[in-house]
Length: 129
Image (cartoon, rainbow, N blue to C red; front, side, top):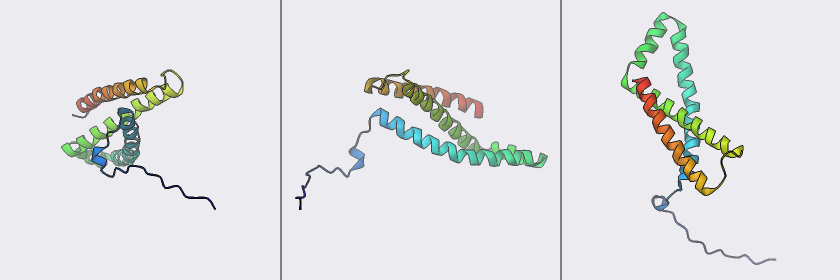
């Protein structure tokens, strides 16, 4: 029988002290925006079905979209979709070899992704409101 080796590793259970690198934040947000986009498909399909059901259904869908809360949700959906698309393009550029897979390029491309998303979020706000 072999000996068991006890590993002495520091354990940090206070998650507020952990600082994620920008590349990790970008990756996590890409996954979150994908989930938001998936849920948004259901909301958008319901709204589309309602608007196509009848003239009254269209009026009801239009009245739903007149509210601030609905516009805010639509802006959030468009922003999540924009981030997911921009981040997906970033990942594909890395996968196809157009961007080097180095830490410096990863950090820079993550920052560029955030900047492009902010611009697209502002444009989505103009479109919705």
